[in-house]
Image 1 (cartoon, rainbow, N blue to C red):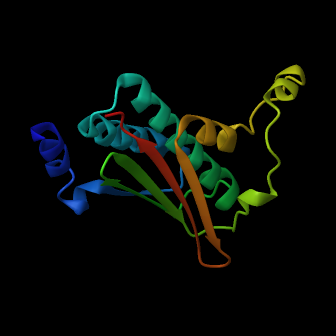
Image 2 (cartoon, rainbow, N blue to C red):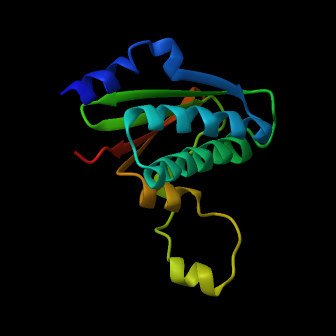
Amino acid sequence: MVEKKNRMSNFGNTNNNKLVVKSSTANLITIRKFINNKASLFGFSKDEIEDIVLSVDEACTNIIEHSYNSKPNFDIEISVTFSKNKFIVKIVDYGESFEPNSLKDMDIELYRKQRRVGGLGVYLMKTLMDDVKYTSVKNKYNQVLLTKKLAQ
């Protein structure tokens, strides 16, 4: 129980659990460091941390490229919360709406055979995380929740 209490105290100050960056790929390293630090404090293994970091990186890259059309002066808000054994990363942007249901399921073998490049972000997030939820309110905001469970 002590380990869980210590882990929970690391997340007590919500100001330290939020990061706002501009929509530039130069800020991806700041995002990766922030998520790496928070996932480490929560108690994930190195491999699990890498999965979480990659998923968040892909989500933010998609926001930069697609929601903000590579314009570097818009906000991306990233916050980390936890609920029991769940580590939840919420990413919010205010760019163009995204409808995840419009994407077809990825045929990874066909993708590989066609030697395509790019377009794996959503597939990776869904593969590496335990849960991925999108919310998009047209002309207002987009939100993605990435959840990873900590093995007990």
